[in-house]
Image: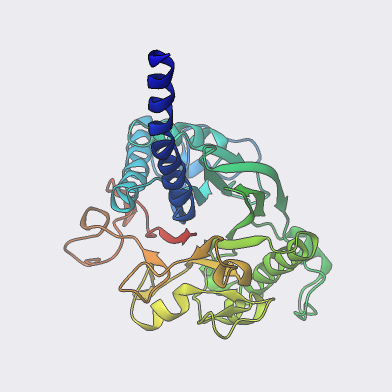
Length: 364
């Protein structure tokens, strides 16, 4: 009898500790936070020719003499940046959108790099019709994000608010660019969709209407998601080749500077305020820009209590971060203070990217 009473007493004593453990676990879940980011990897090509793509400069006998040693250095550099962001945030990205990658193979090599292998990143990628063969992709941690579906959203000229009368049908048919990647899944117990973009380039002065059209496509797809899945939280990210204040972002993607001014069909753009305050993610023709933009819809910017919401992460007022470290930045010379890139003046200098990565943090 004494043994039975002792066992019962011991069990009763353990109950408060079990309840406390459950409460701590529930409290931890309530305070859960995730990093969501974007990084233009600046021409992450392997050393092999992809049939149908103009990747010849990134071959061992091409213009860049792109050898395996250079490719391996590039992989190590990209992994180092991702690992440094983990060190700063005390957590790996839950989701990381990337652009300027040649194919799935380069991403498989990247996620296997020793510096980031423990993150166990999974890959979502589609080959796009871009003539050079560069694509967008999404890396995600399956421990926190449950993948449901994805699609490559192609660039089309209709339906659009833009007047394309200056373009012939032949020109439209010949135009090729990156698809927008859409990925839908569950982050924790909430539904999210991510749209990863790399809008048409500014090279040669082109794209004045093409970038607004790309933004319009992303916006149209996002609004269809909101209609199909009420309450879904949407993140639009990418190298927009435009600044937050350009018409593509403010008009065609409905980007707003503050959460207070948002309507249900708007996006909050944290980088709109940041560029006004002097932040830059790259330099184009000697001027600082933020092309690497991450926006969130109203459901994520002004969420219901107890659900994921974007958080201020810099000085209590900026909701986005441009991640830069001295090793990623030119410390001297003509390009002092700008991103330390892979090639400079046509020569391999072993740098990182001509873009700094950007990210946001969400929390509940």
